Length: 65
Image 1 (cartoon, rainbow, N blue to C red):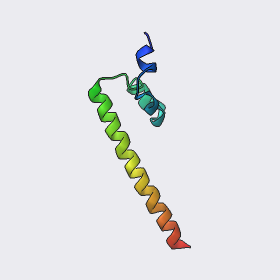
Image 2 (cartoon, helix red, strand yellow):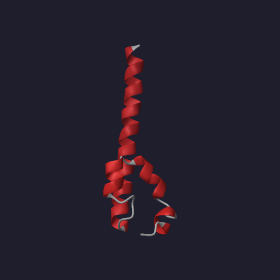
Image 3 (cartoon, rainbow, N blue to C red):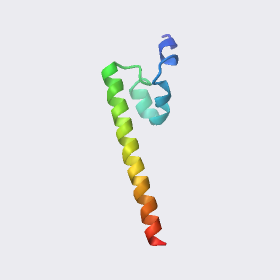
Image 4 (tube, one colour):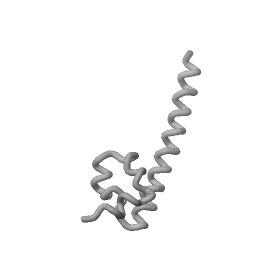
């Protein structure tokens, strides 16, 4: 199977975000556009949650000092 499409795909770098199991499951974003949109929304949701948790953590640490 040719990897030309995957190599030139603009979303390919997002693969680094997912754990190996997810990368394998999603075929490194070779799926349909619908699946790609779903992955992107999940990713942004997780990043937003992560940033909030990070902010809460630093705020909490500041209060304890």
